[in-house]
Amino acid sequence: MYTAAARPVCVQVLFPTRAVSHVRAPVLASRILFHIIGVIVLITPAFAQTAAAGGPESGLLSFLPLLFMFAIMYFLMIRPQIKKQKEHKNLLDNLQKGDEVIAAGGMLGRISKMTDSYVTLEIATQGDKPVEVQVQRAAVAVVLPKGTIKSI
Image (tube, rainbow, N blue to C red):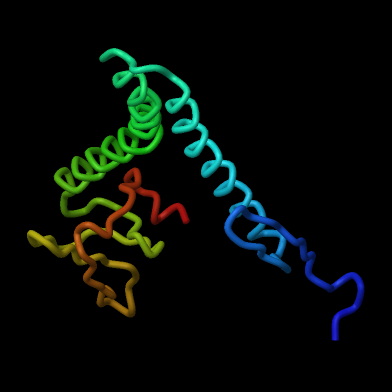
């Protein structure tokens, strides 16, 4: 049974197509954003209907918001991701035996063996034998400066 403080916040939201009642507050923001975008999309044809037969520049102007959105997406999402992929590929190409690395799962170790697709990490010593694990080469996230493992 809910107390007054623990009861989820419910709001009734009316949409043009149907009434949705008892929507929880976190979902409300996404529904409102969806509604605003829908209104913006519907406004554009409304203005287009009132205009007389436009020239070729009106067709170009209708694609301008789409091109602007693509440019924003490119500079904010696509370009940084491509740069990060290039840096990671360069890091993997420059791996050498003896490098101290951190794997994607947070495992810290020194590279003892390498193949084309796998790297063997020495993570500890048990007695006089090293404890080794194999990870995929792509799982290497960071190359650490020499001597980092001994300082920990």
